[in-house]
Amino acid sequence: DWYAGHSWATGVIPGAPAVQQESSSEAINCYYGLYFVGKYLGIQSMEDTGRILLATELRSTFNYWQMTPDTLQYFSPDFQKIGSVALVFDDSYQYTNDFPCDPNCYPAKHACCKAINALPFTEITRKLLRPSWINLQISLLQSTFTPYNPSSSTPGPVPLCPYCCGNPPVNSCPPPGVQQINCTCCKGQIPEVSRIWQGFVHMMLSVLGGSYKNDAWAFATTMQPPDFDDGNTKSNVFFWIATQLN
Image 1 (tube, rainbow, N blue to C red):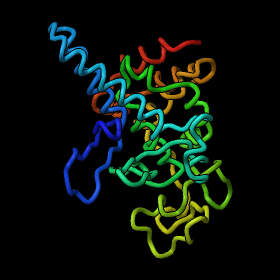
Image 2 (image 1 turned 60 degrees about the vertical axis):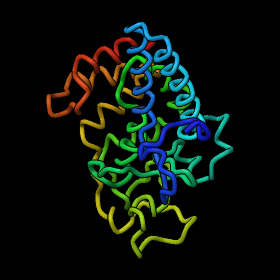
Image 3 (image 1 turned 90 degrees about the vertical axis):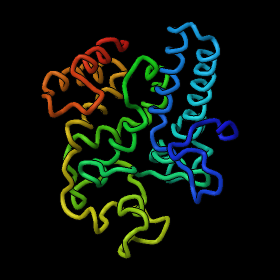
Image 4 (image 1 turned 180 degrees about the vertical axis):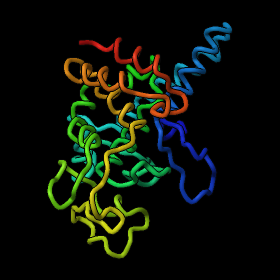
């Protein structure tokens, strides 16, 4: 969509009730691949098309999905506390997923909402995951590593109740503007996010180098075959972490 400056996962469908895109990073990798195919085959028009689509998709992701100190002012106060958008519609944006996270409640779900806009981890992802954005995500990303008991602790900013209970929200959710995580769907202790998503979160944090890179490496050494999602491998995880700046 040249007017929006990015792709729509649902496609550009005239007259459709809504179009949306969840994983901006998947679109970025699509056009990165198109660029490389054109370059490898020596088809200049394909290479150029891939390059311009890649550039516009990256620029739109920086403006519509990621929040940095320069762009926070364009988002509502509640989203400013979260630091990113997970789903962009043609007329709105949301902080949830098109798929169930494991578990499907916050704070664990922060991992899915943020990492779905980072994977797959390839060379172009280094352009996508800017330290200025990752720095604003540290507390929420790290909150996904440990279980959360709503009655005993608060892991930093959490989304509004409707984003916790689903869309539409269940009747027990408070009115708009009231921050709450203890919705009907999220009562009781919430486990940490699954190890598949913990791996992606560590890969995201590793771009900051230092202790984050060391922690990511230590976690990667404990990952077993069930901890790798389709499209990710142990060699890819280690290569990604090892090649981040210290």
